[in-house]
Length: 97
Image (cartoon, rainbow, N blue to C red; front, side, top):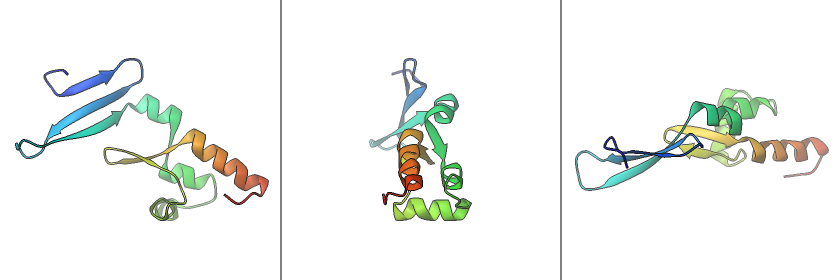
């Protein structure tokens, strides 16, 4: 752990940030993902929704309802490309997912 509280996972662009809450003894850990890794392995929620014809607000509603899978990285909601592409492919083939 570096003095700043960040620990870098080598070659993956993923950082683990330990945050002390309001100066108290409790710590919260957040995962920070580099922009390069996010672009390669994840869609943003609006981009994922656009692949199936949803607008921005409809996409976020679908995430809230559980119809679009997501992972949280800090405040960001990220849609894993591999999972979403498989689900869209099944939908386009006519199978109910």
